[in-house]
Amino acid sequence: YLPRICNHCLNPGCVAACPAGAIYKRGEDGIVLVSQEKCRAWRMCISGCPYKKVYYNWSTGKSEKCILCFPRLESGQPPACFHSCVGRIRYLGILLYDADRIQETATLPDEELVEAQREMIQDPFDPQVIAAARASGVSDALIDAAQKSPVYKFVKLWKLALPLHPEFRTLPMLFYVPPMMPVLANVEKGAYNVAGADQEGLGAMLSSLEQARMPLRYMASLFSAGNEKVVEEVYRKLIAVRVFKRGETVKDYSTDEVKQALAAGGTTAEEVEAIFRLTALPTFDERFVVPPLAREQAIEQTLDPFSHKPAAGFGFREAPKRRF
Image 1 (cartoon, helix red, strand yellow):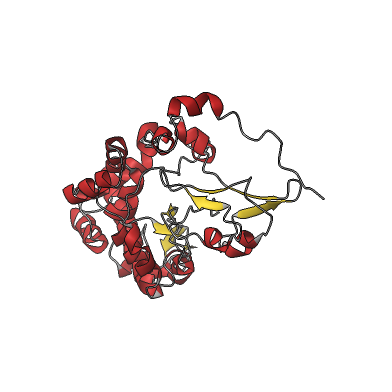
Image 2 (image 1 turned 90 degrees about the vertical axis):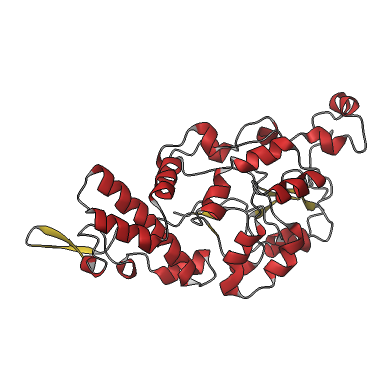
């Protein structure tokens, strides 16, 4: 199962396709929204979104999409689908990126897209990045949230999370950690034998990556525009986490086998432990790092926030509806 919501892309196809200019990407948080006042039902956004995450409401004659529950975010709460996820597999956090590199990144060959998008995401601990962010109007609270962001760790630091179909070149900002599927195996004389387990010397519980039930080529077609090397590096690191923790708890892997797995994954014991902690044992505040969005900063450029607050009302005076 592949859970999919709007990716709130850096280069949104729906924004470019709308003739009425009704779709826009918010500057304060990057959420892509459809203005129900400006929408004129051209429906170009439906064909323009390669992920098919814009829908047309035939009752109101307006296009609608995922709003990432921005009213909840503005009050410090995570979006509803994140909050209610029983499996606790969703994480929310701030990413700082270099907007000047969007065009350059989107025009690269397919095999370079994933790494280029990682390079576009900036290190929130870098003093130069912090200075540039402050110069661009990013508050210290947002910078602090970016430093605590679990998404930054998965995407940039550990390089485990990958964008869905980067070949669409919309630069999606929703990332996925590929699943650890069960490995190929059979039962011989009552014993559970894993196919190809001896190829890596990691014991009978792991098969070689090439023998996994979910082919690398298929996963690469989903998450890396066909670049199997990127997906293989992710799986090597995930296998290293599995081997390290099993060797630590069950103790059926030798120290040499654990070191071999860590070397194959290009990781260290400290990084593996951090990945395990954030994946299996995170607290609510570690999974969802929601900064104060400070909507008043966008409002005060044209209007006094205290005047805006009682005058803005609760939305439309008349509900959206079809005129014919």
